[in-house]
Length: 96
Image (tube, rainbow, N blue to C red; front, side, top):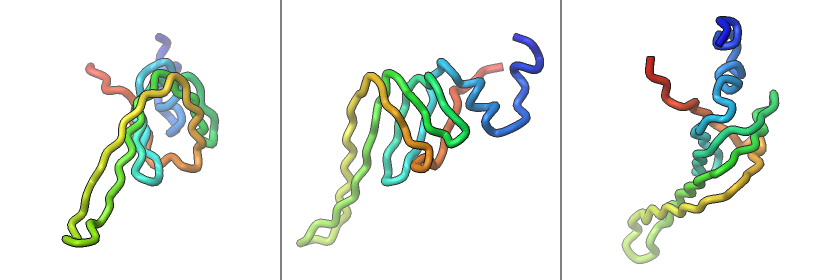
């Protein structure tokens, strides 16, 4: 790979280097995605493939007032992610 292609000069460069790799995306409303990044744009709209979605909900028990934390998982073949809901994008771990 050429030196210029692997250089990170802007934040979106890190996402460009993660194309066709599995990434982690944290969304609003306690949602997390792990999937293969197929495409993105400057608004952070993304198309992910082979996605695992984890939704965390916290409910309060009416009688004991204890927090009940529930996580729901599902897999989706392809998912369009709207960029305004994205909080964090983590590229795959790279070992030197």
